[in-house]
Length: 313
Ligand SMILES: NC(=O)C1=CN([C@@H]2O[C@H](COP(=O)(O)OP(=O)(O)OC[C@H]3O[C@@H](n4cnc5c(N)ncnc54)[C@H](O)[C@@H]3O)[C@@H](O)[C@H]2O)C=CC1
Ligand SMILES: CC(=O)[C@H](N)C(=O)O
Picture (cartoon, rainbow, N blue to C red):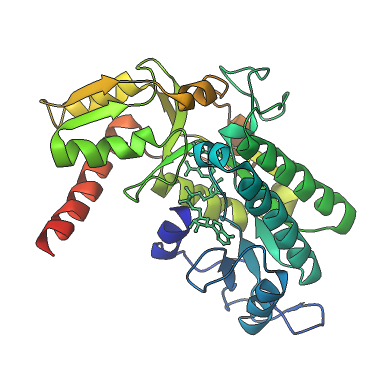
């Protein structure tokens, strides 16, 4: 989901020097007006994150400067196939980090509210606190955070990581626990009904996709000297399913929602309810734009357009 949306965003010209990769030589700074070439992991160039040589070839052929590593199995789907989640989320990160070190790429790996667990303070959850996640997804994300920080300290790798809350866009849900807040728009605009797999009072941090991608871009552009850490919490809002339904009902008054909690409830119950992102707001002036009402308006517009297009085919 994030990869597809990032490709649809036209970033402004970066303000720092871009870097140039040659086959086996270290890169050097070149024309400051030449924007960086960015590899976003996923299927646009068909690439298996577990195929190190294939990735190496892409980096060299396309003279990549930044590597944005989105590939992962999300929380709910990861629990259904733990061995695959270990391979994609952990081995995949090994490949990405080693590649970034070899070719001196700036590397971004997203983490998540799911990197916290029941022993973490949940309201609010600070940037630095106990992290004992209970899903393989969360474990793999803590691994990525720590490995990235290690490579930064040991090899000077420009590793950057944001812990995102549930990200909401019109793309189909990717197998996460927060994805009810995506699915609800598709179901309600199609049928007026939605069955929610979380209890109505389950509070989770959330963010609209445009804020998410802007956070990523602004963070990547921040000069290293301004960063006091390599891993930052970011968020925009927190809401429960019943609060989201109330906001949607302002647009679709006849909405019908039933609740049937399943195993995803157990995951949500261990995650932050309110995320403290004050470090990001202080160090690189992170500021969200979308609150719950703006998010709902944008989603009804985006998903509505998508359904219209599908119906006209
Ligand atoms: N969507 C959300 O709410 C949040 C997402 N994130 C992180 O953002 C990243 C992207 O998440 P989404 O786009 O929502 O997930 P998604 O499930 O929509 O996308 C994951 C992508 O990984 C790809 N992938 C799986 N195995 C692969 C392999 N072997 N090689 C190459 N690609 C492979 C899939 O094809 C898919 O396109 C993930 O790392 C996720 O942990 C973090 C916090 C919140
Ligand atoms: C918050 C996430 O990381 C993701 N959406 C999930 O629910 O697994």
